[in-house]
Amino acid sequence: MNRLFIDTNVLVSAIVFDKNELELIKKGLEENEVFISEHILEETTRVIIKKFPAHFDMFEKFIELSNITIIDKEVYCESIEDFDDIRDRYDAHVVACAEKMECNFIISGDKDLLEYEGTEIEVLRAPEYLKRVNKK
Figure (cartoon, rainbow, N blue to C red):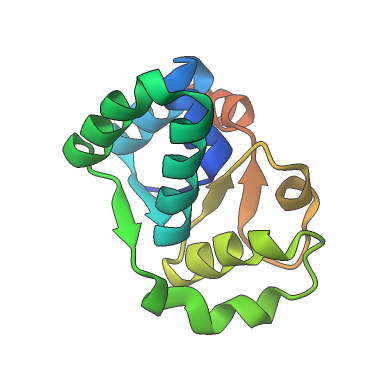
């Protein structure tokens, strides 16, 4: 069983565009543990309200009904400074939370995270992760 950390862009795409990202979350919830941080929940909420307001109720219901574990800031905030070498410092919370939760994968479309080499956690785009797990 894998432990997946889902980034904002993947969560937004799953709700709004219903493609690989939604398949990944569905498959992830069936076969793995899926995590987001409190930061991700807040950012996703802001993005959906600002750019896709018609999807907000669906997003709220999705979060309420899914088995995605939302990690409180207190769990990972002290670790954020451990990742100050990441290009976009805002992304440090993603790695900090994923490491605290002992995730195997971070699923993201963020170029800075995809190129980051300061963690043992593998960072993949949704389609790449799906190809890997569908081969098994």
